[in-house]
Image (cartoon, rainbow, N blue to C red; front, side, top):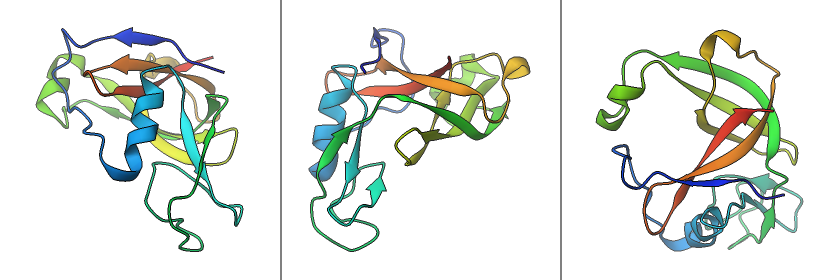
Length: 141
């Protein structure tokens, strides 16, 4: 399943990912609206990408495509911007998302904080913030 990619390059003032090493395939896929995770031969699934498996130490675990859906494990509502580019967004939501495939990742949740609940289903979308990357953002769904 692919998520929508929304071009936010002209308005984005937040941090911009710089793809390097093991993260390059991950960020390339985001530009196409695809969320990747790594699945090692040992069975470990991890996200964000790393040069080694966090379970067995194998180098360059292969990538697999996520369905792009999960549930909110926990979240916080940020009233003070953590980055200068988020000043106009407060309050905004950052949460830990449990993907259907198992990995958990921290991401912005584009939702009304008053209506969000732990355990809520979410789906990935992407905000393109540079020529090289689109950040995964989750929405209720």
